[in-house]
Image (cartoon, rainbow, N blue to C red):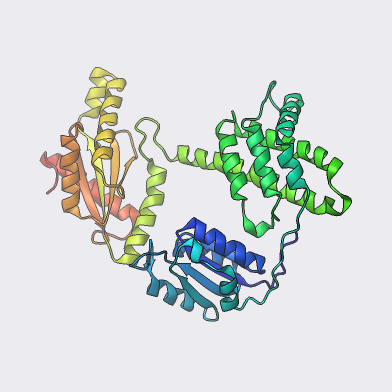
Length: 400
């Protein structure tokens, strides 16, 4: 299905409730709008700015909450920011549940003035649904014969995936709709049990060929083009889901220290910049602790590196046990860790250090610095916390 013309109106959609965003997005896109969405103000506004489109409207869902607050702003602040960014845009604030959202009313209030396009009813969906078991077996057989795939390569959850595709084929698949939620769920399960991304993608290619062969036999000539367009889009998105999932797993693995399970230096650099930006927005503090296990080199030299590793594991477990849900711990060097405490001060750092020792951490030295009181740059705050750690070690005690 063709994408709308370049002059199609753009609507920015902000809201934490994915169900509400889905209803609003689908309704607005059926009315011809290009929807740029995000779970937070920064996310949605950044995407809209990157797209460079003229924004016709802004829809903000604050949820059915008394405080009218999203994670990164109150309703009045968000509305003011939207009006500054796009003076000609209409701003609408939603404060209800998904059942209360009426996309038609939103379209009228945003003055989209685009005709609604109803989905064509295709026979392919019912064919795939009724023959799902047979098609799953045919898909399995084709995978086993494909020379690119391993011998005896059998797609997991085959019938479930076929039924998900059948369900998706009952709806149009314009690019702006994103991944079909039923297909996304099925491919998540499928990818979970696939031996590798390469095998998963190869099997999904076989799925498309299996379904294409069958639909070529039964679909009326007048439905061929739309049927194959939908099939290609559904399977392409399924491949995208599998690839994206694998990429996220690799990215997550790249951010984790393999010994302790804590986040690593790369994650620290990313997260500190985010926390400092958040603190600046809300005029808050961030405490940063640099922690060093005492005598780790001696332990490694006398008892071996396995014993040293046990000290590091004990430190990591103790801090994870005592930290709040908003806090985070990172291993950034051989014996050096960093603890990030949003909305906290040095007194909180002292309390965390005492609790970690009580929770079984080996003896350690630490130093703390504050954003923004001790600096506004990541390197400056980390450097000062590190300096205070070594000062405390020279004095033979933690800073007070």
